[in-house]
Length: 154
Image 1 (cartoon, helix red, strand yellow):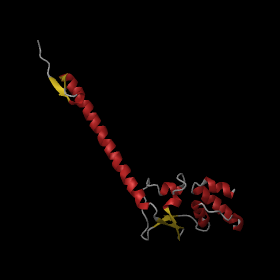
Image 2: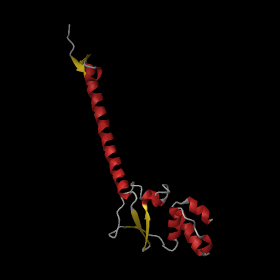
Image 3: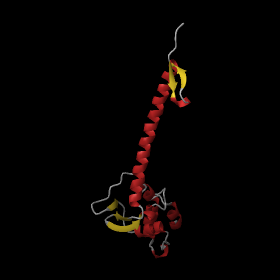
Image 4: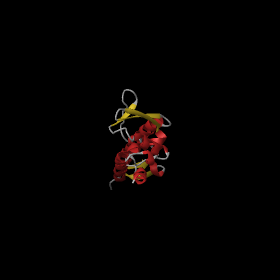
């Protein structure tokens, strides 16, 4: 009669289990450890993103639009999370400021103050705009993915 080797299984409070089950337990333990390590890496990535967002929280943001500097807050640019600005300042992009601390946007600055006022929740003064300015504003609203502004301009 062959004697079967047994080990103590800690997960069941020290119950003796046959050795062939020990190999299965070891495989499962290795798989769980691998998953644990992946979760730890994911947690670190989320912590890094949270740290970036915390650094920007309430922070004044300078936007260099076509060479003209505009200032606002992170709260304003994140008010529309599915917009160009929501993506830009969400922490999902590895965003680097220019030497002067501004973030460059290669667009015409002529109507950008209206875009910024929309982000701030302020009224847009369409009646004071020319038709060509309205066309530029509409193009920018589409570019920045601001459907609420598009609706106002149309």
